[in-house]
View: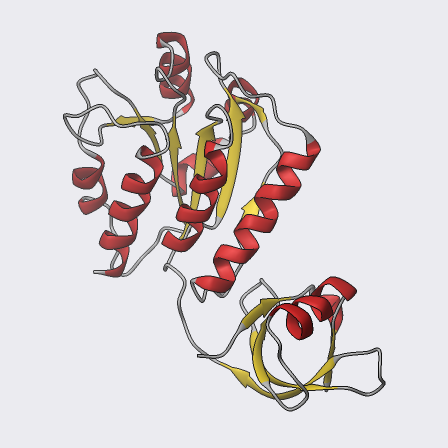
Length: 249
């Protein structure tokens, strides 16, 4: 199996791909790849190429483009995960797993019960994790990870036009709400008129009553993930698994 690596689109100057110093170190020192070895280069925006490593100079490492690769590994519609940040480093694993499951955008939010207030370094770390997970899972795109904002700010930014063409689901506990799976099965997916779908996951302790009321008033539909109370890091994996299963069935 060929190694995959994501590069910035500006690094692709046909017929050559230029690598950064960090990428050159990773390919030659970590992976021990040599001139003539082949890898798959992805631009993180849906395009991939089969390339062959070359050494135009002793200190440099580049790749010659051999051919474009056409394959489809993405879900048929864009999925956004809105998630209240969990405590500690738990969000690292959430980013990794939902990237593997096909999420298109991750929007971390700070809710009334959020304990973590991340730094810029955290955001950069999450974006690196998403890139690594996209490479590992043979994704064609690298999910966008937005800067954290308050949940209320997120609600304020939702245009009504988006809500009319994009279902927005709010996962809740201890509420009478339809199961997410039932809602997904009722969507008109064939032929698919939907462009995107959003699912929101709360923090430890769940959304507050006020947050639930505001989300519903904005256009979110409350849904359940089952009769058991899931950990905040388990819920997004369950939700994305259900979504991917329905969209790819």
